Each structure stands twice: as structure tokens, then as C-alpha cells.
Length: 306
RNA sequence: CGCGGGGUAGAGCAACGGUAGCUCGUCAGGCUCAUAACCUGAAGAUUGACGGUUCGAUUCCGUCCCCCGCAA
View (tube, rainbow, N blue to C red):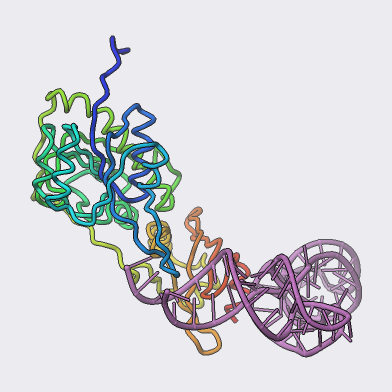
């Protein structure tokens, strides 16, 4: 139904720091929602040379001419600055820091958070990788009101998503993230007008059903392959092969799925960078041996598995 | 200045001041009932980039780029 008049722009402050934050921003902008102010985390030295790298959200803000703040601490000084902005809604998407109650409660329409799972399922740090690892293809996105506890606040909107309707099989983490971020942004955009108008009643989560996801560690990416399996991936039983495939996809961005082989008496780390699951068989396409460039799996088998 | 490893044909390695060799793979042909085996032949490298030293550099010197491990 076409609306009689365009919805008046809803001013809001956006908190985010990661790639997911940027995808959400892009999608919100496309849908006509532009933040008045963006809050992100400070530039940090990154990478091997510890080069000071501007974070992606800050870069985005500058490109789009939106004022940006990158406070080290969300203290009273920052709070005072924030009060100068006339916004009565805050949006948080992958900000990376705990936001104090004082700030959450500041706007009249409170603070909303995009979370890429069907809360109370998969609260915490790694909802997307966990969904892949646990093969949870019926998932979704939630818009919730922030409260003092992690991913604990009442839900104002939720959308169920069946991954099988959008992907043949599990995509890489990056593709999954992009897809879910867009879904979340769309749901948020749909919900914002009604929320601001006071037409939505937040629904308390069923805390008894809450599940939590942990922060990923490097060790999570380790796969315990035997030489025999590496030489003939087709022999790996379905369950194991599919579990490994999901691990490769889930950790695709970081820490990446990897395994060790012996070469000249030394342990050599091999990262898996590309794999597909066809039929009932895991197929690895590309790997990066430690100290080397990316090579095809057939080259790897030929030259490293003697 | 965070620490460290590495960049030579598709891959793994070698060589060395005089423009690069080997193994595997690739392509063609042969032999085989057949083959991942064997035989013959072929293609494929501006030796990461740019400067410098030199009669001449892949090889020596300098600068830079890229990749990888640790750490973040």
C-alpha cells in the first residue's frame, strides 16, 4: 500500500564498528534512513606492521559526510557530548563495547539493537558462526531493546529466515554475514516508524530458553585430518565431512579452518581458503601453506603429501 | 620503528656475476586389455618491482611491493 505521505525522517544515532555495521548502514541508507551521528571505536593499530588503521565504520561515515565520534571511553564527557545531539533513538549494531545504562536510557525511544539470530537463541559474541557450526538453517534476525545484560532485552521485531531458501548450502561466513546484516537492516527499517510512534509493545524474551555463543578463538579453526583423509577426501564419512565443511565456512573470515602436516620434520600449518560440499563429498579447492601463497588443492596434495 | 619466515615456469625445489636446471603436473604422440605405470617430444619464467655497482646480475648493494606465522 503506498503511503499518503513519506514518513518523516527519523533522526537517530548509530553505534557500530565492524564490517557488519557497515553493511547495515548501507542498507539503512538505501531504505532512506540516515544516521545523524555515528559512534564507533577508535582507530587501532592492526596487522603485521601494526599500522594505524581507520575502522571501516569511521571511513564510511566520512565518505557520507556524517559526523562521527570515536571515544575511547563512554564516560561522562562523552555522555555530555551526546546530549547535545537532538536524537531520540539510538541504534546499535556490532559496536564492540558495552554501552553504559546511562547512554542506553538517554533517548526517549531508547536504544535498539540488531542481532542476527532468533533471540533468545544464540546470544553473545558469535551467533553467525555458531549457526553454521550447528547447522541451524532455520534462523532469523531480531530487533531488540538494549538493557543491562548481553542480548537480554525485550524483542520488538523478529523475522524468521530459512537459509535453504537463499543458499544452496552454507555460504562462507562473510556471505552469510552480509545477507543477515541486510535482513536485519530491513527489519529495523520496517520497525522504526511504528516503534517511534509507540505502536510496538516490546516482548520479553523467554530467558529459560536462552542459548549463548562464545567468542571465537584461534584453536576453534583446527581440523584434525589424517594424511589418508587429505589424500582422498571422498572417503570421509558424510557426518564428519559435512561438519568439517561447516567449520571451513563458519571460520572463513577468522580464524580460518586449518590443519597441520609434517614437512621436513617440521609442523606446517595449512589454511583452507575455499571448499564446497557436493553430493556427500567435501571438496577443498584452495589452501595456503604456511609461508606460501594460495595454491590449488591438487597442487597441495601433489607436492606436500608425499 | 612490535618479532620472524618467504617471493626463480601451474606446484615443489636447485643454481650462480656471463640471461636459468631438476621433480611433479599440463599438452601431443607412443606402448599397453588397461592404468595413477612406462617411453618420446612440446609448451610454459620479463628469476616480485624499481634504481645502483659492473663489460655483463637471477646472483652484489639500496629502496619499495606482496604473501605467510606470532602478536593484536
